[in-house]
Image (cartoon, rainbow, N blue to C red; front, top):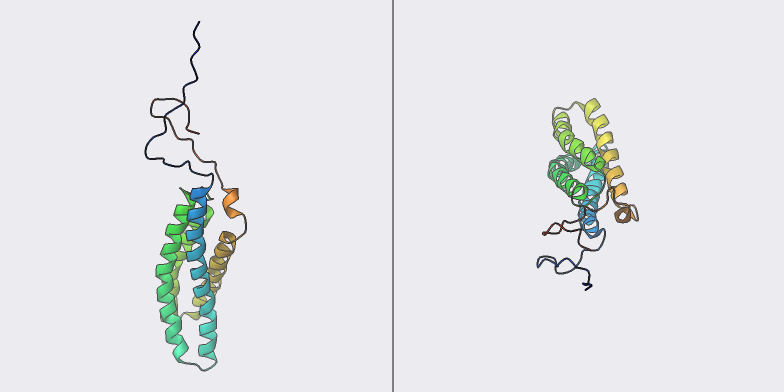
Length: 165
């Protein structure tokens, strides 16, 4: 009786090096960390600029409005980064919901400020600052990439065998 060595699945040419566990998570997490930190800094600067206006520095009001307009673009970058951290990055989905809600509420915030509905503008601003800072703090928490939400999906072998290792 002849024994044959066990068959090893061939390595496809497009996978030159095996991916380390969590490598996709780390890359997408860094994108989320950077854009959420930028958003958090801009959000925290808004009450400072408004306070400077109330203290008599009148050009701060136009800066406050310009930063608000810029925040709308940054908010959509945070949404894209959160989606990338969720799907390919295997992190939880709740940052996507927080980022999307912030991106949808920022035009309302801007409209309330221009219309001088300060009661809504102030309360909504406090909520947006809290959500943006919470998202950035969550993204920058140490060890975030090692605690991904779901395991990496095994890749199928073209000939129907088991997963590549």
